[in-house]
Length: 305
Image (cartoon, rainbow, N blue to C red):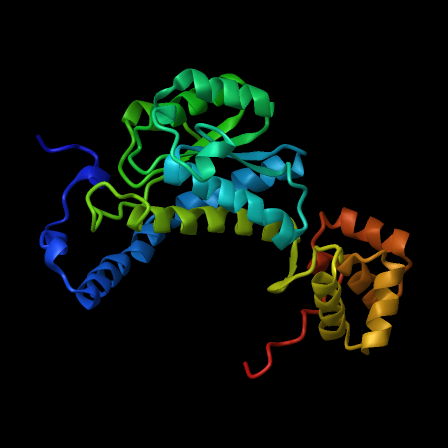
């Protein structure tokens, strides 16, 4: 019988995969992957809506939760875990919840995706509440753990969304605030959604968190400026950011950062407007954290552009 889930169908272009030479496997997979970006682009307005929902949740002091099983769950945890080092965000802002818990990150927890009670317990343990945004990730669009999580989150007053690569049930979609469904087609290896579906999912999650963080003022132009210099690598990066954006020497950048207690955004505003630290922080707060609303000039142009 033909499975209605796109991700479970056989791909006719890879029917002789088991006889293919290494280069042929590479060419086939590369050809299949070329359509992933187009599938994601087809969901541009829905992804933008998810960014708006995430930004609204963050500005109100709430959180974004990704919920998934297997590869989908791991991608959610990955995206969430990369936000603090990239944007200097609090680890609680974006959280990943995976069926089977942390053990499932490195070893499959068989049957965990089929346990609705586990989803409800996991969301309660994380304290999901009204105002939060919960995005379920289910490549097939049918994972019981994810569906139960979304229903439970909605009952708790949270906003909800889904990222799937096969159309979810219409009755589920009707209850969601946003449904992002990039149809990537049958996989090279039937049902192996860590391939095209996984790539599309990672792209979508990257867009949601990056877009929301940019909207919160985590960048100045395309420079990551909302960071704290907590190790040698970040201290060097912080100094280079201040040198680039303020046109000062390395020693002057260090002095500015010391006065700003290591906060790059604050150091930039202090220098450009001649303010002390407390006033610079207050001005940024009034501008909802966006440097360009405090300092009208753009960051220096990209060299060679």
